[in-house]
Length: 436
Image 1 (cartoon, one colour):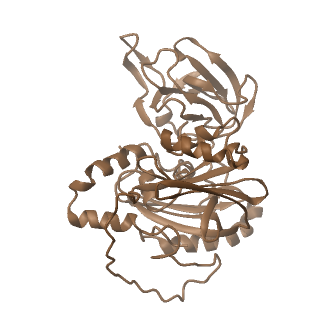
Image 2: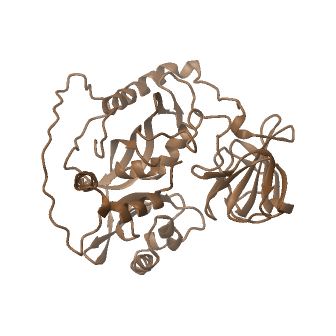
Image 3: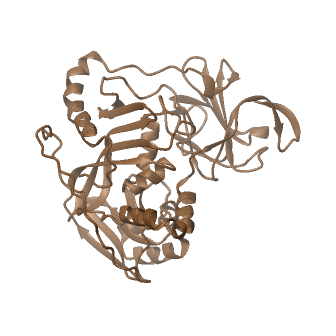
């Protein structure tokens, strides 16, 4: 079982002093790599022919300066959040992992900068946060290329507001999964929303709840916008690779969709899970002891344990059949998909925006948020997959796949995907935290 990001970081913080000097030195060496430029960082144009490049590995010993009480602990990570309608700065800072007291300092500074104080829906906020919730750096790009930055200098937070011209770069990152995909991407300086995106892209072939193995490897190519050498926000995930045990999985982006290098579509007709990352707390069963009713009865669905407020996604395009409260389900959404397929999502704390009976929604759209309404002892999602109205075990079904790439797009696809595949092949097997 792979654990979430915060427990892993807490584990490292508690147990780091107990590691052997050799392991501790290696870990600090990895985490102390500079974020922009520096060691193991160089530029490669997207269409560069790399076959004739001379490659040389250089190993050197670096003596790190002794830490002082004012220095930031190396256990920190990038997070990026998209501003949703109705979001407040306080709510965004909470999702970014900024501690409450620290968030109040940021909010006080933001009152002098309207673009950050009232961020517009659709924009993003990029932040680097320590494991303890201390803000190291925050950047928000508003209208007309106005960048508001807040940066830590010792114990102080200073703000800068300026009009900028962005430069787009393609970043290449790779790493090894030892505990979770989130922590592996953190170690490679990849913003954590790409972990969710990668898990969705490969959800047709990998169950990221159960199939991850220690030693799995990932590589990603993605766009990022820079100003004065500093990353402001990320763009599209251009290509990805995941080695799950002995199985190699690859994806390249074409016309806003993802395909294998051979042109097979990776967009499933049905997502494998209604949440990107969560834990299955109770499976489909003909006889389960109900914790509330205290009796044995069938459990015709799958329960996913997750914190209250975790977004719940529609697993496929659908029409909303029911939305409201219904007995032991509590707050419930029922979706009618194509043909005989329908799904149900229970115990929600609240419904998603625009979710009403008859509304048409898209695959992946947020339809509600985890709660514990109805007969529930704790926050979780009760999820049912139905065929002709009968509940079936979604983990045991072979569901319909998506339509492959159309023949008329084949030539354009081959032209666009070839350089992306070449770059994935270039970094395969290398544990790189910076390869730009």
